[in-house]
Every structure is written in C-alpha cells, then in structure tokens.
Length: 169
Image 1 (tube, rainbow, N blue to C red):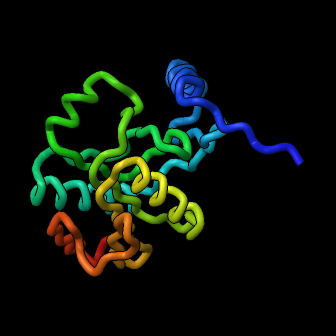
Image 2: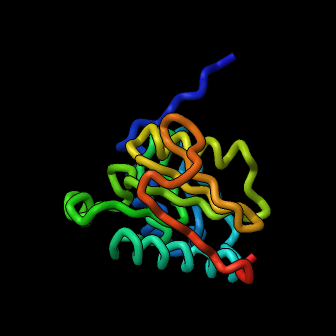
C-alpha cells in the first residue's frame, strides 16, 4: 500500500493562491494536507446568523479582533474556522498574509447538519496543535463545548460566556 504524500506548506499556499485567482473556483473550500480541495456548500442563513452572534459576543468580551471565516495554515492543510480571535499584535504579525501562517488563539466551529464528529475532532486537533489555546464547538441545538490541549473543559479559559439566543437554533 502506498502512503499518502503530505504536501509541503509552500505547495498548499500556491494551490490556495491559484484557487483565489480562479473566477470559476467555488466560494467555500478548504485544502487538506494532501493538497486536495474540499468543497463545502454555502452556509445557510441560520448558520451565518449564529456565526455573527458568536463573533459579536467574542468581540464584546475579548476585543474587536474576532473575525469570521479566516483561512489558517494547519498541519491538516488550510482550514477555515467559522470564527477566530487573537490579540492585535498577532494580527499585526500576520498582516497581508492569506491564509494566516499561524493558528489564532481561539477558533470556533459552528456545526451544520453535514458536519461529522470525526471532521470536527480533526479540525479541533489541528487548531490546537497549531497553537490555538482554545477551540469552541457550537452544536446544532446551541450546546457549547470548550476544548483545550488537555481535552474538554467545563468553561472557557478566556472567561467567555456565549449566551446565544435559543431562537437562533
């Protein structure tokens, strides 16, 4: 059996730039560690409302550096968390770089019906191995899961409270 060959970061960056320059490329995609494009359907309006609520809550509690759908380089390819946050100095270090060459301190995944448990575990692991201090997973019914390098946490290490309106779910 042949082992899969993992693409080096430079090849992933070139592939990302190629897709970004292609007017026929899909709107929502990621690139796995082998350089393969993973296409995602356009998020639903409900999903995007939840993403906006999470982004707003994080910005209010941690500062305005919370951003939705930013591409980041990980050991599992170029991934696009639903929301990220990191301090201003890290944004300054990464200015002009797409995807971000580092994983932000906080990454959030808002689940959609099409997500699998394995996919989210893989992404959370990639974010944490890349330097995220915390990954938050927002479930389909609004349940919140906080993850750190040590595993699941009872509460956010950032002191976040994501009291999301139940009407969003």
